[in-house]
Length: 322
Image (spheres, rainbow, N blue to C red):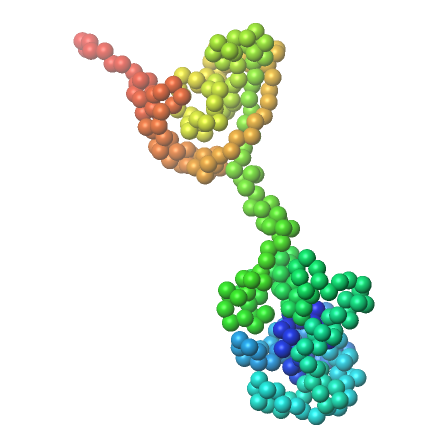
């Protein structure tokens, strides 16, 4: 009865009303007539027939083979008992937990079995969650099944517990901190939304104090050029550079002088990206074009919008005689 209480996830009323022969063994590919507890192996599952309960009709659910073996051991020792009345259904049935023509009382779990187990284990009847009652094991195993390595879904757990509504099951589906931590890690938020970008630090400008007067001292490497804007992390155009006044193209005289300096320090900085910016990095040209289009009228750090910068760069055609 202890093993059924711990591992079957039953209500106390369901447990004391189990019928004789409530365990069946079945191969995972399909049932096999004549399969017994002795011949059951790792490729078999143990099925428990649960009687009609307070919220629904009788149903069958899988349980750990340990439960099936324990019930089989008890059935081998159980003296022959007469059928007794099941007051819930009005039927005369052979109860599994029956002795001397008396069914085990529902109160026996809370007032007899659990106190005896606590005394044997040397633990108090009360803990941080309150009194240890027959419902504790049902709630515990439900939470464990929901937080397992290959967890049950809410609807699978609902069927296993015999609930009529998934709202009831939600009270049992407590997410443990370990499961929550794993889900957070698997979401891979920072790895997906943060990128490392190289920054060149001109130590000479810093050491001479020229940085305080506005001389560029840090250069964010964009691949095709450098951005000298000190608040690069806040610039909406950082992943779709508008080539504003802070932009230094690679191959230019400024960038060549910068890269030739001996006291240049190279560093990496983490850059959190928005969904659109991550798309521009990962998806390619189409995503970049979409980002550029959205930012066309957003001012750059110097004040002009990308549209205005594009117009300024157009060649001026002078009128003249052909």
